[in-house]
Image (tube, rainbow over all chains, first blue to last red; front, side):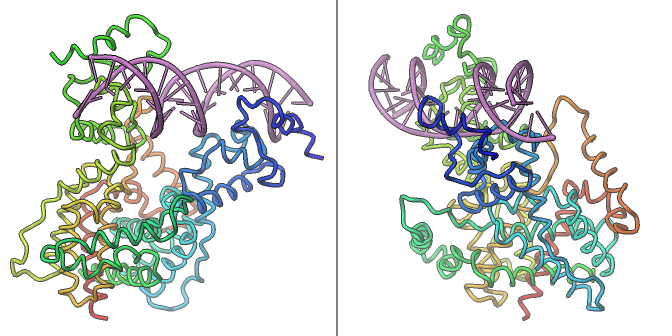
Length: 245
Length: 245
DNA sequence: ACCTGAACACCGTTCAAGT
DNA sequence: ACCTGAACACCGTTCAAGT
């Protein structure tokens, strides 16, 4: 039924090759009604698979069997699209039940953990979440909870803002700093990591003993589970530390 | 003298307007011999003034009164150019004299402070520093010092790597998360900040009391001095906290 | 309401050629 | 050694028009 509307496009594939490079490929995705949600979903898939720079108005249009300009009905511009991705990410945060009597630092740690869990599957777009925390509904809810716990810990409204802002940015950094390269066809997986490690271990042992000793962990730590837990602990303990000053 | 070599280019400005949009404009910069250093310097200026997305092979070429393709003699591709920016940034870190008998946490704080000072003037490109810390000479020196102090604090080689990596990423986040928009012609300065603040203060007082109380600080804290000092304290205190586990 | 067609300004990059 | 000329594939975006 809906197929009727782009017979011209599918027909175009057989003829005229001059601008066929942006022509919709029907095989990619089954054609459904275009919507903000379906565009955001495929954009996230694309970012997960090939990185943020692969997320392109033209590629998304192609995946939906539609002209690039069709996107501009659903989003004002590319920036609004990216805001949509960030909003979707933040909406996935499952905040714990508030005020269950636990100490503020335990509650704070749990909230940061939930935030981390929501964005961890999507390191390529995690950094986008920053500018939507104080815009999206669920971002505001998270911020409110974090600020409340910081006030409870004794911080002023100003200091709570400063610490709270940094804490949420730091969680994003925790997952966004993952330097794992996207799979490329021209080299086998893990080769880049091994090269990097070899380069570190070839350094002068007199000048860089600690870099050499930590080399294996330095090149892989950001994918390890210990990295996240340890540094969440660091953040919460840090808040406790400065709350006593 | 050196002017002779692009008489054709300057001559081109009077005639042929069809592709004049990339033509070199002699008025921008006095023509000097092209070099990695001069390109990096102008790229940093451009990023500081208009943001990272303004840093373009073609714009840099134009500023140097040269063809875009001339850049490819000095850099393999745009990524190498960005690596060059990152390297320059990290080279500016003035590490304190090592081992002056001070406690490890005092020394650690000082190193992180020096790193912050080096990148703080360039928030638009601070994030680039991440991938060059373990590549550039002075990045390795900083990493060596940080790891050494963490070992001194009792961390294993693996945990030192995990904590050290995060600390340096966190300092970058501290300056890179600055959301201050670049000056645009179409609106007066400070308007965006005031709008954002107004939006937060218009929220429901029952649901978001703490966001509202912290609203002024939430929208400006990342430009304030207190933000940096407080969160550097948080980081160092956090390291102390987890070093005792 | 939702999408197409054609065009525009701007990207990075390659490759052969000039001096 | 260092740079130009011409071309290519790919961007985001506008604007008028179609259904």
